[in-house]
Length: 557
Image (tube, rainbow, N blue to C red; front, side, top):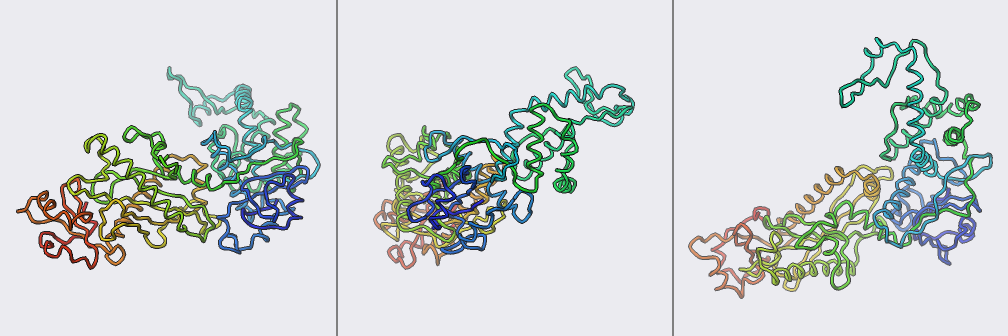
């Protein structure tokens, strides 16, 4: 197995040897694709990992350079070695993520694949991946579920002879029918009946159960069969081949032989298998940034079919100027209980990179487009119809604050798939026309975050809706609170906040009388508080400041 990384350069002679198809690298030997490639002619297996696995210009996240990484697993078996478990887990999740992308985006043309294949046992030495074996077990189980059910029923029926009903009733729990009649699945017999077929199926099911636990396959493994788990399974891995060969002569049907072959491949110390003859097998993508965006979108965005102002989130993401927003969700605004759109952009770089000037400019453009869309609705209908989304407040003509964020994938720990490690990085970026007018439509803010790519990868393929919803809730709360903390900090935001406190003066009259100097600096919240955001050093309204009370930004809501 070769492990290569997108964007890295390798020796052309080596690449020409391991790839039958030359489209996966350019004329200088730089890998231009991400995915899985298996050449049967050259007897080579290749994983092309995303460039996020580069820690910096020279080192991978595995604490070795890309050239050393490419050769670590050449001519090595990775099936049972605990030291190599990380490549088994990574290759499986990575492979499944491309499958998941195809499933979520059936019309997408960026993923290229050949037909899948199954392992076929014989004595010729061939290279195949651990995930090939996992997929072969899963596919065989799905295609032969009726066989496993039939064999179990057959065994239960045969074992019902000479049943000791007193012990059966005492020691097992029945299943009750609608008529409350008990059905006993586990029977206690006076004479033990040996079922040799069940022994083989037990091995198969135990291996499948192991795969399910290791990779979260969401397969309902039939627990009516005796499953070998934990330390007993580890022991079985060591002597399973010997146990198998002792019972080999018992199996004659094609199905049983296939089960035997799969188990034998798993228990074999060396990778001795071949595949149904084809030139190559692959699942690759050249625009992996689109896949990464889709992965993050599943974690953060609202359901694309969710209706807001008679438009779905998917429609709102597609701007009239042709730009498409990566991530978008509705949440409580920073100022009151109204709603606002939080707009995100997933950035696909190496682990050490940050957004450039072009990305920042584009993100501000996305925010302006969403603001304009809501203002169009406000003009077309009226303020009541577009609530709870409030982008412009009528009395002050002030604009709500539009939060934006970048999200960078990085890998903090090469084996950690469970912790998101999401954190704010760098400074809050700002764009403005008038830097002293916070509530101006051109005053926009972007924060930057990084998130564990491996967490995103696993969550993307697991389809655990409760876990994803919990993550969404936590991240949305964190992003909102980080923006609030930014405006709370006078040194960072450069703004001090006040609430109008003169009960003897009508707010509206006060605004009209002083509109020229208050324009863009004041905003009336949904709970009817008039808020002033005063830029540090601004003395233009010193003569009016006695009408306001100093507050923290967090106290506005």
